[in-house]
Amino acid sequence: MADDLKSLLGLSPSSTTLAAYISSLAQAVSQPNASSPEVKSYSDAVYFNYYALGLSLLFKPVGGYKPKSGLKLQELQEKSLVLDGIDIYHVPPPKAGANASRATKSAYTTYPAFPIVLSLIPLPSSEDGKSRPESVSITAETTGKDFVLCMGEPDRKGGGAGPSSGSIGIWCEWSKDGVMVEFGGEESRGPQAWERGKDAIWKVISVFSPRD
Image 1: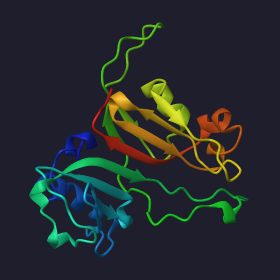
Image 2: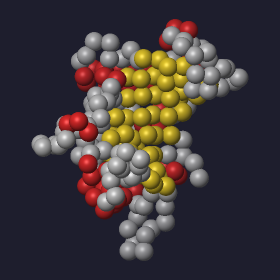
Image 3: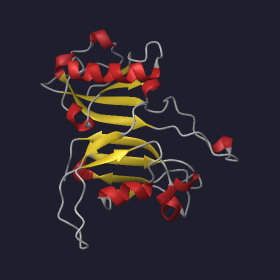
Image 4: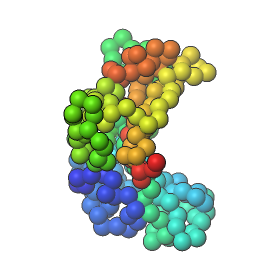
């Protein structure tokens, strides 16, 4: 198991390190074919979707490689792909009395390996003298408030409102850390989403190369 998922970025699909990571997740769910991804290929991106593992890997073509759409795993030039992004999914059970019709069905199950550890870039100490931790440790219960307490205010944020009566969940991005978090549940939607968002549980964590 990778101690820091960011260490996987830049690897090819044929990497033994990446294969060991996927294998360890598959063992945790004990589900047949869990380590076999659904592949979606495009000229500028190839996705490996592991629905049973709550995981999606985004590979970027390099060296002039332009994959055709609809390729199968064995048809890819794996040496010409590098891991550019990781999406981790969390599907919490609906709360008692929740409106089931509004619950979005996800093809993914919940990621099976907790805690999820992500390294953080060092920042100057805050005004109260507290230094930023070297990493954030994420569990299935980590809320918006927990993320901000550990990581500080996000560089970008959005959501909480939308054309369908506020159906877009709130999201926060710490660009310099290479982490984006989308939140789920009723607390993440509607006009008061940012007031209630501190209690919202994360729905998707996206990991990518840090950017300014």
